[in-house]
Image (cartoon, rainbow, N blue to C red; front, side):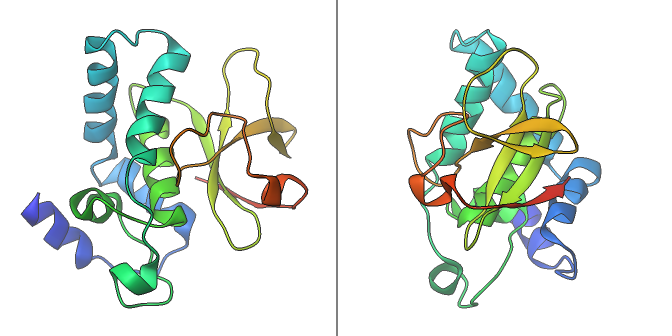
Length: 172
């Protein structure tokens, strides 16, 4: 992981946050991480579609939330997923980029977006089956809110402070 972390820290930061997900899907480690989590879920008896997603979400939510100014010394520093995984911590955009990258990858193959309510970032997930929960409408489709920074939040559950907020939606 040291060489992957070192390579990630040297990458250009001149990109929008949604492009971090695109990069990880095309050139980064997203597919390998997704395959590992998918197999780990199945090996632990989580064989249903929703169970596997929840397994991956629990993994991401267990990473401690640490603001950028504490972890990097910068006010705002978006990490590549290998930086987040190697440091085992991140803030809302770091864990959202990680989770969106995992779910967009093989074998999950989900349509995810980044959601940015004021002062925060989460993931929007287009569920492939009937689902209830809080969703943002984007391009005529319902993307269910996913909170990545705190354990215990399920798909479609949104913190009260963001329930009535508009969110900017970023396609990944």
